[in-house]
Length: 422
Length: 178
Image (cartoon, rainbow over all chains, first blue to last red; front, side, top):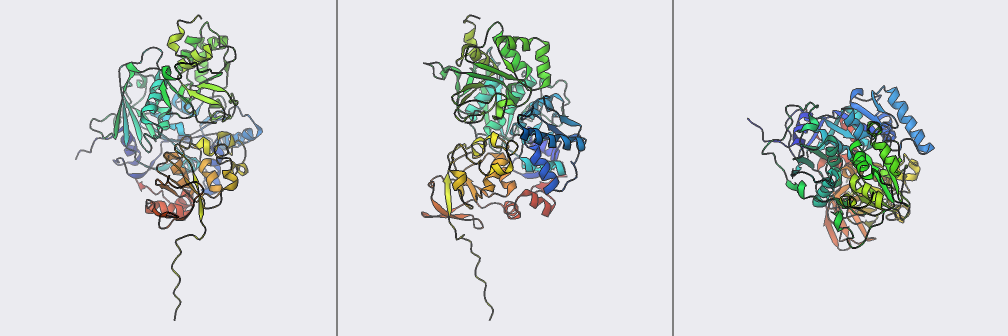
């Protein structure tokens, strides 16, 4: 008997469950990789040892621990908490422990090839959907779920139905993967895929970084996972299991078509990720003054994002009264930027460079916002108070828009900058 | 002659206050990142819920009070300390037409009753009775049914969360695979 065709999410969860499963079933299945970061690890370790009474993790090789949320530690409190996490990881002899400065957990797990096509990855961070960039089922969970996964090697979940995002065409210059991610939020809205998976077709030309921009933001439309079809040059060096691939006839609850060629630069205005319009439509009659530009995060802090900003900033200076903060997503991204001159260009333009990690994305350190600040942010959330003061305003945009804005001091379409004097 | 025990009381004697919230309440509003236990302490968490969005909430909320909100409650981060803060102050249940999935899961894991129902016509400050067993709310305007939770969800609530559930059953609520 042939089985009905499956979505990518159904295929991966079927593999993890050891039997064919379909949308709607509540299942218990095996976890391939569990990730925990410094912000949640103290709670996870407490639940694991005190509430569950576990002496260790189920499989050292399948656990990753990253110090990235407040790295380096900003206060005695966080330093002490991190010390506890570090001691635990060393005691447990966990081979995949990533210290301060290595970078954001999601980027590091992709670089280290711990997240791979077809795996079920659970992480103590909502942006764990990022692992879908390599065709993994990545999903975020809270401390209790992660502690249970570490103790048992299992988790339970409802097999999600799937919304298909289907692209055609090619992005034009000045338009990037971030604009696609924001456009998806604009169309689906913040709860458009709640309890569901996103599956992305037509992105074969996208780099791994561009795919990660898309999948890291799957959670911003409520999705449990966001999985890019595991084909194209970006996955040429990855081993894609023979059972994983787009199956014609799989059931999609909704299809969203995206015409990449027609796409304009997008911007999410305060205070909601789905408050998205074409950049050209934001206050068209007046300029939106901006005094902070922040380039970084798991969504847009990679080498290619810094390089895209550097191309715009080359030979230019950050406008007076504006601070440009660049926090690379990983040490590897920073090293690449140092090697190819991107870093010099950013510094020459007046950028401040932070330690690779999450930085001010969660409003804890390394560039938090003051009341009245207006920030253009390459990250993934513009909630009130997200980056510091609840009286700051955050616009989400691409690295290209961020760089152009840093030069002018107001929200700027990078395509208009060519006509301005360098 | 034996005494017949009185029928179990399904309606709590004490009424609960409704705290009304809008749609898309995110976890940064419930507990801003800088109030994470990691940044402060577990003790501080009790003061944190809605500290900016609704500054009077933490001081005035009483055990058993209900949060009634619009769509997509709890969207944003995976921080379990958001529902944990609501549990610390004794929130009796959260009722919204839809929840962000990680929040829903975290609340269930901690044993906080969550119901997917649209009660946004209730007013802030209204007094109601929640009958958890019968999945009903008694309001001044009459009785409102809530979607009955599946048996396994009730068991998780009854156990006091997923950890005690797991310890008691040796398994998760989901249907096991291989």
